[in-house]
Length: 188
Image (cartoon, rainbow, N blue to C red; front, side):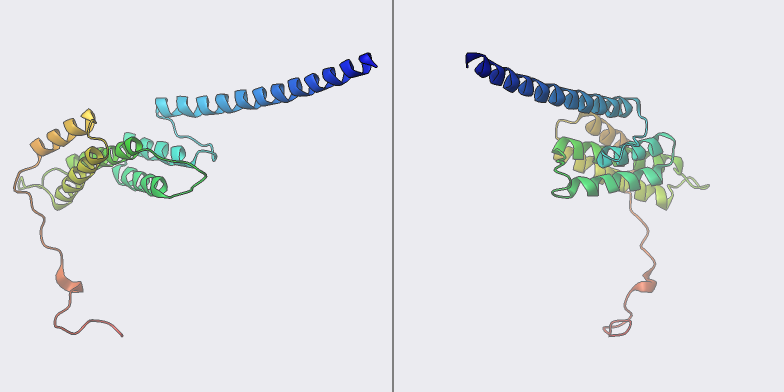
């Protein structure tokens, strides 16, 4: 009778051991997978793993900016920011610091874009560059609002403010879409 009780205890312990081994193998697989994504992020590679849509979008936008395609980089970071602001998306929570880094990268892309089209033939700043500079300034300020300790955002904002004239203004937009009288345009 005593021997039968020992067998039950052994069976239970073997079952607990097997469950523990399966759990350990699963955690090792997840750790390896996360490590692979982290290495790709550190090296600036594009992530192709659909299990990490936020990181995939961020790395794609970063790569676009790295190759000089600043318009697409800004769009990609904007989409990343939209994803970050969604609630309950696969229980993925984006911290304020990560949102600050997205705004910082948007500012960098806009700043670079403005520098590419810096001046016209008569030496004045192009309208597209002015717009990019003002948007970059707003992005850096938003990054600092979310993370006031971001030294990189502070430095780039001060650099941007040193590049753009203090009296920068954009040309008024084409008023063709505005109302001419008190009557609204279009069909009711």
